[in-house]
Structure formats: C-alpha cells, structure tokens
Image 1 (cartoon, rainbow, N blue to C red):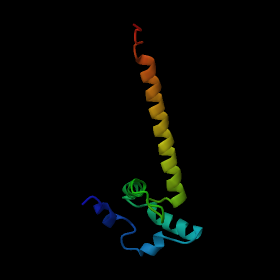
Image 2: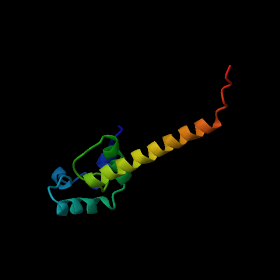
Image 3: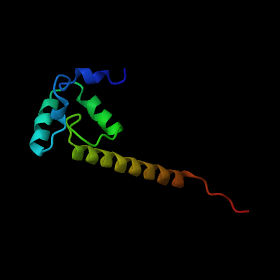
Image 4: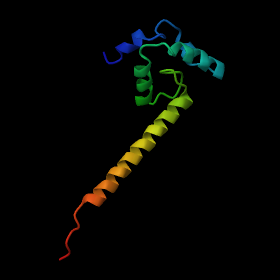
Length: 97
C-alpha cells in the first residue's frame, strides 16, 4: 500500500490526540517524538501533498507546513518565470511580410 510507512512511524503506537494538540506545548511534545522517526520525510510529504491543515505531521506544525508550501510555490513560480524569460530570448524574430 501507498501509506505502509504509517505503521512504521514513532506515532504508530501513540494516541492520535497527541499529534492534534490544542496548544503550543502540545505541539512541541509531538514534534519531539518525530525527531528520531524513520518515516518523517514520508509523513511530511504526505501532509503537504494532501494539504493537511491540522496536527503535527513529519515533525512540523500547521504553520510550518504553510510556510513550506508557500516557499515551494514561490520557487516554482520563479522557475516558471525564468523558463518563460529564456524562451522569449531564444526565439527567432518572425519576419514581417
């Protein structure tokens, strides 16, 4: 299965409520469990890909994931703009008839 990694996480035997805290202290407790998790990258990518807004995933808070997504979006936009600029400078001028 695509999400088999979930059973291997440090969180697999913990109550889900631990990863959906209502305060900053709870977020830090959950993040500490993620530090040594072997599937942390997969967990983070899962949360980012699925736009999961709540809880601690891959060792990140909701706010941290929003920042990651924004950063990725800005980099993608810059790359696309750069590609368009390169295309514009490498095309041959069209002769006028």
